[in-house]
Image (spheres, rainbow, N blue to C red):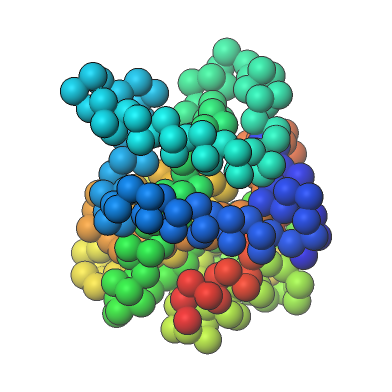
Length: 261
Ligand code: SF4
């Protein structure tokens, strides 16, 4: 692992690894359970409501008060990981402002971070019990390599293991140990992809690895299709969509193993 900066976020903060980030998110999630006595599903619902609506109506005043506290707590502890958001938003072109992922605000990143942790807690057992378990890696984990030899496979692209330290290759080997098939994402229409897979494999579990806004939205998509999905965020957002040209990124293998074993 080496500390890398993303366009808007980096899970390294000032550290040499992203381990502290995951600990912080776990502690923040636990703290809000203890403080507000929410069940995981209820806290998830509240977090999603907060992310979608910046103003909560008067009749939900109790929720509005809780949300204000949650947002402030998240800001204090998660801001070190999202230092690039403000400058990025200022630099967006008119065209880029139509892209919901690119225009993600800083408080949304913080809410997405907790949302991903909650979804993992809620879905982990169902994912592990699924008969067909698959992982989707983003192309940006490999595509800065000029000679990535991945090939189209039965579902999505398949890694050919050409480079021993490639993050996709390393992740794929780990996933295989736990009976999870790995693919490199190539399909643009993921709703269609997952719908088709659900017909083919009624007992399906999906593990996503993606930048924070994409991962949170992917987990929501899977939920809407009745697929238990879990995920690990990329350490930093550095693909061409964010940076103009693809730059190497990584994800936390230790956290991946914790999630699936
Ligand atoms: S190891 Fe796999 S994903 Fe990485 S560059 Fe080679 S074929 Fe592509």
